[in-house]
Length: 372
Image 1 (cartoon, rainbow, N blue to C red):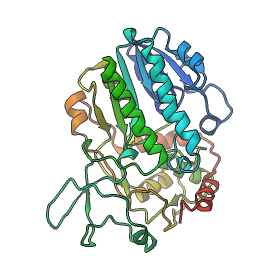
Image 2: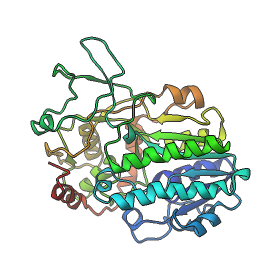
Image 3: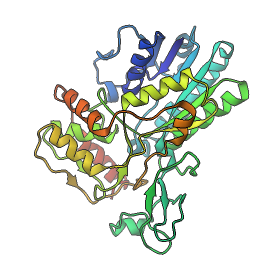
Image 4: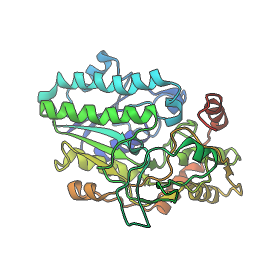
């Protein structure tokens, strides 16, 4: 198996490269080494020397064509990542993400006779709010829209039913209607729908995996638009309080990057999920406040988080994965408990430095009325 991973020098891509190499695959990575993610250091030290690195933009047909030559499996991770930033850099995000996927697919079609699998990274962000149940009636499978502005302005954070009482979150299934609330989420919906539609039309086995909140070593600590665990860590490493929006009791599904890499390996080596979209998460909700506490304790920092009681446009309250379909079709179940994964992340963090640009990122949102 010879695999191209677009975005392969990044956080998730490099971990998948390690898994593929261990299975005897040849791995090539296409990556633009974006300074917002990688700084100015060039090829990352963590990228295995066996990985052939092609530096370039996924929208550059010449570079992309060279990167695709001779491969039989394509994993598309290359993307501009960041919900908040996507809401004011709309053209850049849409160009890199949606147009980038279009260029990739056209180049893939030129080589489709040699291609055995196409995998694309999607995101839980495309759901918008997660799935809920009414604890008073027992009705489940409720797919609410965004919380109304007057409710958020009153600092009432729970998702409410028509009777004004809170709904309870339940695992979010792949069948939940998609209600993306950011340009980034819309782009990721484009990713999965484009790849699956082209795969079906041309007979290319294609799979879309909806990643939930991925954490682990190699995250970009100086990028204020990356995952919340890395953002909190960058603050604490600079002896500053983690910034928490709303009240900190909102929950997400945090999954170790090594479990993500294993799910991707299963998706490209097995056929059970071809033509399908699958959640990749743990199915366990963890509050944002608990993440801040665990990281602070692990780094030995007696710094309480700053609970801003502000909210950001499009933010959701709860979302965690219904994992049954991935178990059924791929035999995948997350194996690394949150606490163990965090222990490993914290051990790695002790040797890292991070530029804290979170305040500037928040100011950019406030200036545009996106945080209030």
